[in-house]
Image (cartoon, rainbow, N blue to C red; front, top):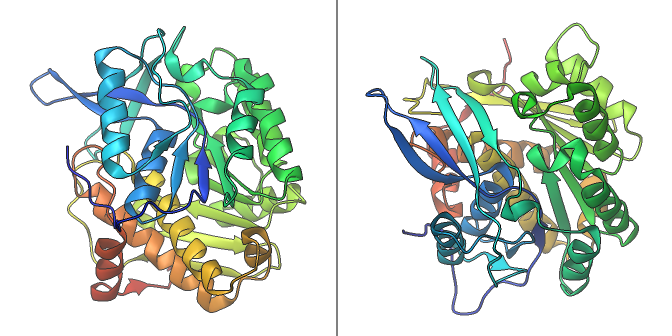
Length: 344
């Protein structure tokens, strides 16, 4: 296992704490066999943030089984700190991934009695309290299972009350949820706590958000959550938008077609690139809390962060499985491949 993050002799202070699933993606090969890959949206986000030089802690426990040991080893190799370094008895979550002709994944999950769900709101909160430099907390995806409502929703509310920037990646996986209505309601409840929301056009479909097109629907969702400041909307090969509560919006897409291997981890790499760029910009304005920085974002800051996020996703989709790029690689791609800024 190798690491592509930017490192120095001393570990970076923990600025981001991530809670959610860590699992093994069993990706179907053309010959019918399955390739095991380390994955899970929030696990991928941890790795992607650390590789971009952000001090990151993973809050959930990991299993003592073989897959859990591999998940742990990769986090450590990428420079992610573990809130719970001691493994637990529960087994590792599994996701069976079938890819369509465009490399788009379809998931089936196995998540009963698993390690990453062996967590409590109190435990998550205590881990965050122990991080003096913490600026951002993030969850989403499978953590928004209605069956885990009493874990993540109180934790998000407490983190917002503590002055931390709350990021929620909707990243819906309806195939794993027995009650789609309850799942949808839990996702909407989580979004009420968020400063920053990330959705895809598919997420908007699953959330039944009204509007004539994806951008209008994303704007509707942003305004429906009065505490939210920034919305990231990803459209796959069609690019991505950033929408701010003040009414401003920015678009970017790759000007040239990419050689896509698969899209596993693309959204996670996008979000990591976005947060890493914004955190670096906020660091320049010393003494400003990240939440305050997001609230007063300039057009230039948003466009640069969006381009870096898009570059991070582009580099990921050209690899098999989730292989998040480091800060330097994403920055270089962004420099050498100017993005188109016309959605037409």
